[in-house]
Length: 180
Image (cartoon, rainbow, N blue to C red; front, side):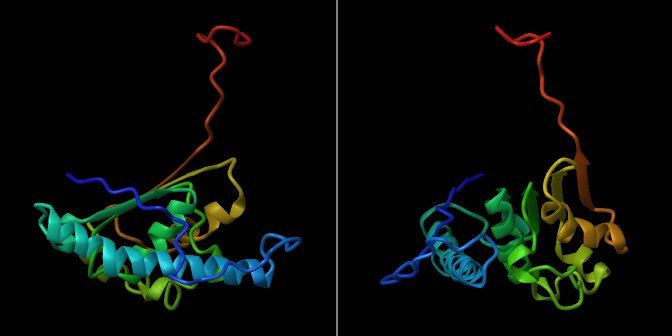
């Protein structure tokens, strides 16, 4: 197994970052900057990184032997990249990933059109994706629970897909200085 941890804040060569001073999260300018960064990351992953790894290391260079997983922003990028490129990936995992916020804005995920329509046909999705694992805590913001996770709970997604929600309780005993 080869694990590659790519830098998620991708920029295209010569790109000048916009001045987002004073722009709130979710503003049109902020969303455009995030979409541009995500598109650059997706291109870097699919057009440069995967071909480089497959040409320089002993890999089984096919979708049946390739996975992508990510935490938080990496989870969001995982969903975007893998669902746009099911020809490259068959194992997908997201840990607290805000699936779909940049695609959806303030609306519910439409499985027929969003995420490249990857969720439109659950039977086809099950044949193509060997594992889809989602982990989202119940205490996390709604945007992290509502995207793909919410769509899967409302649909007839395959049994090989797993959604997990849990509430993690802080551990207080057994640590020096912890309250008991």
